[in-house]
Image (tube, rainbow over the protein chains, first blue to last red):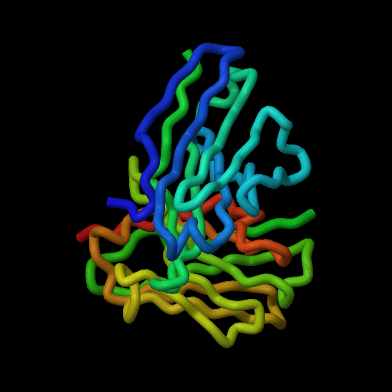
Length: 110
Length: 119
């Protein structure tokens, strides 16, 4: 059971939009920046969002994110089959002094 | 280019030890904290260890605290993960990851190295 809670799966049709949530608490999301990672099948994770809402160079603007209170959200618009992957949120927990990952959300582009 | 390459023996028996290495290149090693993250077969990501940029501070989750030790050799730009008292639950792909120098995010990941604990 992860401290950061994500839905196990989401799905949408190509071209549509999807939002993935990540729920935590004051000691983690509430007081530390959240980052998001994309893991394509059989590959290492890749950073797609940092500092709650910033995109690293090379990440398309179809990817966006926000954080409010003790929750964070990753949005992907104009879905493509190549976006099918597992997505993980992550942040530091100031009370536990540990890094936390959410349980991961599998995105299926139907 | 920036690169992280993990290595280490793949199979170990329960109760024994194993050391993983992460060779880094293409960036100023001493400016970055480093992490180890693992992923058990069919499971999600689990953070395993963090070492500060200067090597003076380390953090671990309870699942490995007291058994795993992260260290770094600045002269070689290498990060290590010493794993002792291995259990079946330590079977996973182990990733080395770099912490960004301007945020808390893991901005570069290695390709991972597989560890199997089996009798």
